[in-house]
Amino acid sequence: MANVIVVGTQWGDEGKGKVVDLYAENADVISRFQGGNNAGHTLVVKGVQTILHLIPSGILHDQKICVIGNGVVVDPQVLLDEIDKLTSRGLFPPNTSLYVSEKAHLIMPYHRRLDLAREGRRGGGKIGTTGRGIGPAYEDKVARTGIRVGDLFDSDSFREKLVRNLEEKNFLLTNYFGEERVDPEAVFTEYHGYGERLLPFVTDTSVILHRELRRGRKILFEGAQGCHLDIDHGTYPYVTSSNTVAANAFSGTGLGPAGNFTVVGICKAYTTRVGSGPFVTELSCEIGRRIQDAGQEFGATTGRKRRCGWLDMVLVRHAIRVSGITGIALTKLDVLTGIEKIKICVGYQTARGERINFAVPANLQVLANCEPVYEEIDGWTEDISQARRIEELPKNVRKYLERIETMADIPLVLVSVGAARNETIVLKNPFIS
Ligand code: GDP
Ligand code: IMO
Ligand code: MG
Image (cartoon, rainbow, N blue to C red; front, side, top):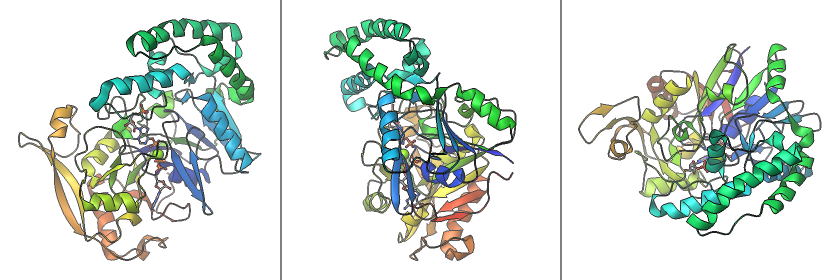
């Protein structure tokens, strides 16, 4: 029995939430390991939509353990709101537990303020962050000045860290950005209140995960964002501030890589991106708008329009390599229905005439000047949302899938034909390796 790591292969919003919710049925523990409430993971179950930002997408199931690992940055207000909303809607099963790592770093009000102030300063060169304070929170973690969830329970040291941090942050906010200062006492009182409410959830989650693994329980790791938003392997600097690749499932939870793990890469049948940065297969024509409309491509966190383009296999192959992906879950295939000719980007042509097939260039100037090399296949018009077996799909759809599988050089393990949990064709259960 394998444990499963789910990661995005593009720029996020590939449908990780839907797939994690579906896979959670077969798992005992579901754990986030990086990112924060920049994530927006959408689940549709029995016609009801739930968008999760911090709580793992296994929460709707009975008798699961949901973990927010040490690699996540936690905005306590958002977490408490999420808990309250799920509870009031009757969606937090009483026999499912939620644990938050005491080592996870807190997003503080000054992180959000700095995130927004920096973006404002960058003007046209802005990254297009979600404005949730993610980058500044990770900066403090690496600078060794961060405040962790566990610090909420030691008032004296919490106040001391807060006051020390605010000396520097307020200097920046007022003198450099021309913003108002943040009052340490107000933040202390606010966060003290959060600490009181969060106490029952907070623990050393590494110990829980390790215990469950040794008992032979199945762990499902839920990645946020996508490979090309990874701080090392993505289109830097137009990325997020954490490692989104599968390897971080281990350091982000406090488990070692020894054991039986398999990696499923979630891949949209086309490509989207929110925020700035190069996008080789972007479509600024009618087809792009059509995909945007049919796919309802609006950000689940900020509501921003997602930029849309053709499927880019250079991105996907790069993701397969850096995350060690063993199977692809292809989502939103239904969105392409009705498009006469569908293109797949099989490589890039650089401005110097070189051909690139596997590795997205690190130099953004080179990347921005790459031209996509397309292969064209015939589309289909049939409604595919009712298909539950691969044989039920029209011939042209299967051709598209075969081309993707051949180019990825790994098998498709799932095909999603609608937003709902049941609108899915499962080809292989990744928990059975
Ligand atoms: P995540 O961040 O990777 O979890 O993805 P998001 O939830 O941000 O965005 C995916 C969107 O597509 C959500 O609105 C999902 O409900 C929806 N979705 C997921 N799979 C499918 C699918 O196969 N077809 C369609 N039409 N929508 C899907
Ligand atoms: P999920 O988990 C899509 C993007 C932002 C911006 C860049 C940096 O739902 O797939 P940040 O606020 O992280 O500093 O912003 O990363 N971004 C996402 N795009 N899906 C996400 O998460 C994202 N999380 C961050 O739009 O371009
Ligand atoms: Mg999302």
